[in-house]
Image 1 (cartoon, rainbow, N blue to C red):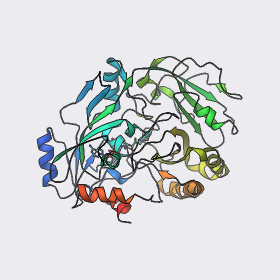
Image 2 (tube, rainbow, N blue to C red):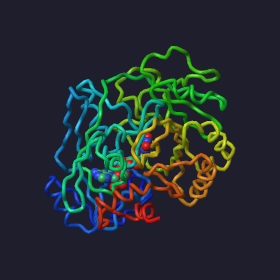
Image 3 (cartoon, rainbow, N blue to C red):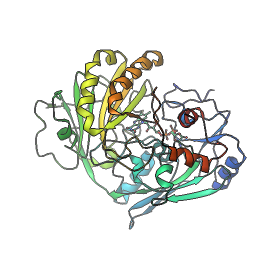
Image 4 (spheres, rainbow, N blue to C red):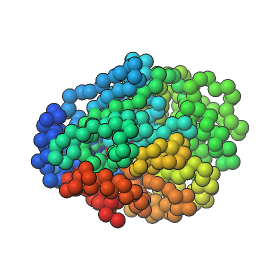
Length: 400
Ligand SMILES: Cc1cc2nc3c(=O)[nH]c(=O)nc-3n(C[C@H](O)[C@H](O)[C@H](O)COP(=O)(O)OP(=O)(O)OC[C@H]3O[C@@H](n4cnc5c(N)ncnc54)[C@H](O)[C@@H]3O)c2cc1C
C-alpha cells in the first residue's frame, strides 16, 4: 500500500517508515540513516513531510504531557495531537491561547509549519513554543529554549534541523467561548472592526457570499454587525455540507478547546480529505485591497473553490513563520480535489496577491517559492551538514 498524506493527494516516496518506542531507539535510527525525516499526522497537502530515504513517526513513543501549573507551561511529546493535549490542560484549569481549525494534527508538525488559527491578538501556534528538544543527524539530543540565538530559526523549521521529540508550550488560564455564525456579511463591512469583534473571527467566503464565525469570550454586547443576520442553525464552513462534524455554535458557551477549532476531534474535518488547500499571508494593512483583488477574479476562482477562509494572525519573531514580523491577514482556499484544474488558479491567486508580498503556508499548495533568509540556510548547514533531513521540498527552497 502506498503511504500518502491525509488528503491522499501526495504519495510519499520514502522507502520505510519507523515507529520507535523509545528515545534511545530513535537516536540510533537517526544516527544510522543517510536520509530520514519526521512525519507528524500527515495533514500537509504538499510533499513537505516526505523523505527520499526513511520516515520516522513518533506516535509510539512513551506518552508525555507534563504540566507545570505554577509556571503555566506544558512539556509535550512531539506526536501528541491537540485533541489529546487540550482536554488534559483544561482539566487542570489551563489552556492554549489559540488552536487551528482542526485538533487532529500533531503539535510538532503544526509548529514546524507555522500553523495558526485566527484572532487579531493571537499569533501562530508556533509562537507558544518556549522550548524544544530535538535529535540531530548524529543522534545527539539538543535542547533549545527561547532566548537561545538559534531558537527563532528552529521552531518553524520544516523538519529540516532534526526530529523534535518534545516541546514546551506557554499556557493561559482556561476560558470559555461562545461561537456564533453570522450570514450576509457585506463586502464593504469594516474589516478591522469585524476581525477584532471576538477572540477569534474567521470570514468564510466564495468572493460573493460571506459568513462570519465569531468566537466570543463573553456574551456579545451588540446584536452583530450592520446588514448581517444570525444563522438559524449550525453551519459547516463549506456551504451545503452537514454541520455534524463542526463544533457547537448558536452561542452555547463551552470550553476553549471545544469552540476554537471549527471541527470536532471525533469526526473527519473539513471536506474529509476530498479537497486540496492553499493559504497565503500578507500584512494585515493590505487586507481590504487584497480582498478587492480576489473578489475581482472571483468568477475564475469559484469553479475550483469549495470555500475560502480569511483570518488574522498577530506577528511573531520566528524567522520562517508566515507571520514573522508583521500582523497578518491569511487568505485560505479549500479547493476541489482536481490538481490540474486548481494549479492555474493557484497561479492566478499568487498574481493577485503579488503586490502585497504574500507568504505561503508551508503545509499547503503553492507554486511561487518564497525567499528563505540566509540565516536559516546557515542554521540548516550547521545542524544538518550532510543533509540527512533534506527532501525535495526543502532542497527546492534552500538551494535557490
Ligand atoms: C483539514 C485541514 C485543516 C487545516 N487547518 C489549518 C488551520 O486552521 N491553520 C493552519 O495553519 N493550518 C491548517 N492545516 C494545515 C496543517 O496544520 C499543517 O499542514 C500541519 O503541518 C499539519 O501537522 P501534521 O502533524 O500533520 O504535520 P505533517 O504534515 O506530518 O508534517 C509537516 C512538517 O512538520 C515536520 N514534522 C512533523 N513532526 C515533526 C517532528 N517530530 N520533528 C520535526 N519535524 C516534524 C514534517 O517533517 C513536515 O516538514 C490544515 C490541514 C488540514 C488537512
